[in-house]
Image (cartoon, rainbow, N blue to C red; front, side):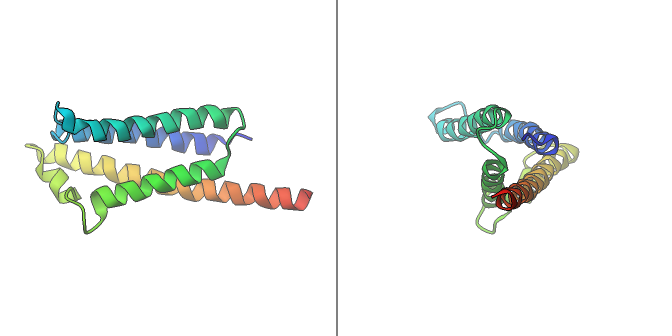
Length: 140
């Protein structure tokens, strides 16, 4: 059974992820050389997973547990990439990478919104999976 709230969270996360990728490109993190290959591979893998996942979810082949795992991995990637003590690109770096303070804060706000949506999707999908598992257990 498809859940509209979960789909909305997935779509919102995808849009914010596209904006965050545009931020990486605008900051010059993705040079037009072979060094960009890892970024492109990871980016394509993310969008392929989301696209195939939405198709499979729409056709009831995967459920909320899939989205809980995918969104949870997204939270971990975002944390390790921008919020952990080990990152080279914390929010301060993102802000200072732009000539405009407003552009820097917009980029950080986009990252923060992406993280909030990914956390919400993880929690909500986990809730849906638990509810489905409880319903299946009662029906057995």
